[in-house]
Length: 122
Image 1: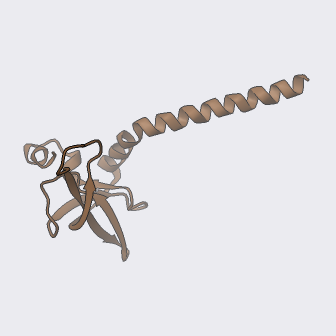
Image 2: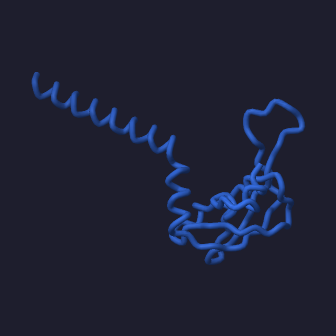
């Protein structure tokens, strides 16, 4: 009987730890991604493409949106959200990405605090 209780306590503890890790990662994921990109990223020019990202929780029509961008690393296409309604398809923007995981990327202006970069944000 004691052995079953120990197993139950172990599984319960493990489950609670996994839930905590999941919630922590969900809440702070972008903080860590931005921190890594600020310190360990490569830069590349990307082209804004005609793929809309509609902002959530807007009931007003027309809905605000931003366009995606596209860039290539080792002949593989990667995409990201320009995170600004100020870009149009065909524009070129600078992006930061991780060389080992190019799918982790952000517009370079998003992580800068200079006045020009702040104007680009919505």
